[in-house]
Length: 213
Image (tube, rainbow, N blue to C red):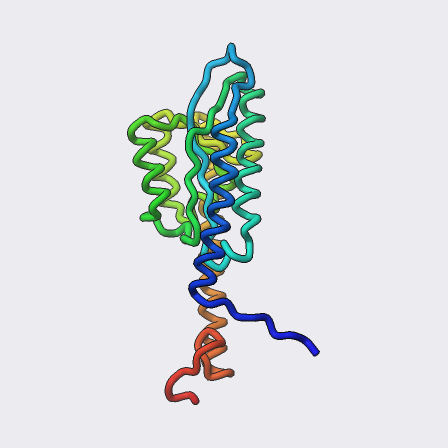
């Protein structure tokens, strides 16, 4: 007989989410505290890392995504330091748990923008465009801010020169792709909910819809 998986309460979900975020923050804080220059003779440039997952449930079931993003971004910084002969030093890690990339008014994203405007960070690193934004207009605003404030943009495994029109176009296409993917996910979710209402008489396959029971 197959055992039914226990459904978590709202309080349990919050607790698990807090633990996942705390573990990610601990790893980031450890890296920042123990950082050493690749070469003491090289210039040191300070910047930040940005991490995001889409929704609270993803934080719970995909805690590894946050930890993976931390490790991948740290590896990217080390690689860039060797490549550019510059000590790139991360002084802050922005963590955005459970917020859609289509929303511009995300707390950590807004704070990061404010700090870039005020010249605190001179580079920003993130795993991929979709981790930063899923809206092409928001991407262009962020991109233009970084250009204005001379803040470099590091995307994992993607060499990027803001003075090269072809590379700028490539990154803009990635932003449009991330936005399109987000819209497709939303569409599929709506269609799934609609099917549930018609065939199971429930909304989101859980709650009975009044008038259909």
